[in-house]
Image (cartoon, rainbow, N blue to C red; front, side, top):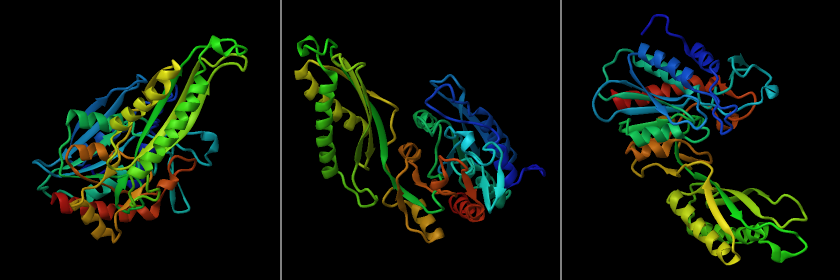
Length: 385
């Protein structure tokens, strides 16, 4: 390690200064490559070998993932975080979002908690173990586009470019281990009828009226899901189906020829995205076919499966013992299912509080930093030494 390796504050400031907004709006979407290049330089200086893996990008911006490895052999520990941030309105910030500001025992900056702040904590933990020889490899994963499509983690999972026994997703959990979260899928239901003069209903087929029937059936479907899937791990212990927005027609004196409904489904463990999508498709077909309405269902993004840690999870027991905190569930989704799919014993555990994420004046509490470094150091020692 270089004698001039940056300290925690400097590393976080350097990361915050590199904008990496991920957005479905291509006009404000950004590449994350500068963040990845910075992290690769840091981890190479800490004795890691680094591999950069690009992800597909619908915006045309370069999207890159980092796999940094120290040590050899099978098994080992993956410490994972995403390098992108949500969009922002700078006018709502009281400080510069792209420069770290320390005040009131807090570190303000876009991504300070969600989740650029995780990587400097990891670096400090790695520095704590010094040049110790690792019996199992330590792998750092830094991903792209978690805030939109999770394409970075999806690419890593699809290519099989990552191997490990344990995985810790460093999302801000207040340093409480998380063993479960719901999944999410967002779908667009698009109905095509036939427009015509509103004075004579026989001149058209009203897509808005057909959507009324579809909505009625979706609400029945929601009740069926809530009776079938229940889990008291969650504050809302059943799946939800939200009617988010609807658009249809163009004028009150024309029969509505087209209508679109966008819905959000929060999935419980045991619910499979593709299966739920197919059930919705069949129900929409049953409603619209007798009405002469054409339809299509378009996923707004690929979706995130629900996550539930293994019942005999060693990494969960380890963090519960260290922190004195029992594993909990959270309402937000993460990249954990993609790493678990690769066969890793996975949990979510990191410094910061999710309540500070996705809003102006995002901050990392300094009170989280030293304990976070200490816990990650212990996890590395237990898993790799």
